[in-house]
Image (cartoon, rainbow, N blue to C red; front, side, top):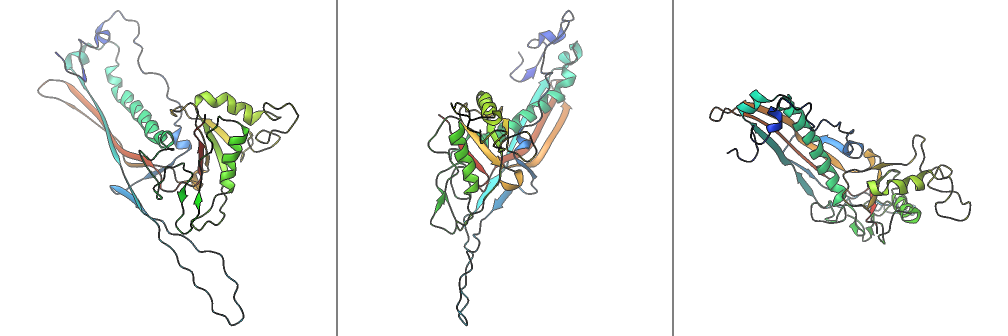
Length: 314
């Protein structure tokens, strides 16, 4: 009897029956990649990526005439190393099934395998957001989760928060609080370093809430004619270029959490290829089966938390 993972006439009998007019299989078009709209796509030339952190300088100080010029120092921070996951998938098709396949689907296996890779890339990338509130899967240089109320600064006793608190459902007030975090961003010496937010990311279940918040002329849910600061009149979120936009993240697992990110140049979310898709096909002499496999090495991670904010929702 054929084992698991083997495509044979006995377990794919529909492919060998001539009377079927059509076989429904994975022919649906994949949407454009979503992770590439958010993550910085990099390629690595070694088996790890290591990065450190150094604080900058503070403000220049007043000096009396003839006085000594004060010296400052650059303080070194922590280090982090990321490594790459090897991912793979294979299929074994018997010679009899290849001979008897009336629908030509066996010949489309490379196409189907490529679609599996696209899906895997989305899962790997969006896991950064799906685990952004916990330290289980990854942490930044400061050993904190991507979204934390206690990010440690290299050269300051202060901490920084990019975590919406309290956890609240998507609405005007908590969303504006996330946007304010970009204005309140600081460097490693707690010096103001504002960043421009560019995109709100919401799960499917919050799409229509975001539509109302983003495109209503007047304040959502209010009795007065207050201008909606998030909408067209407020000109924070609108259809014109340069305005804050939003996207639906179809691979977000939480139905409540929502996020704001800066331009790709202003955040450190990265998707790194160590080895892009490689495929190999061959015949197995002993079983007369056709073997096909696809492999790649990649990871999605971050070093620095800046340029991202989020709320777990309620």
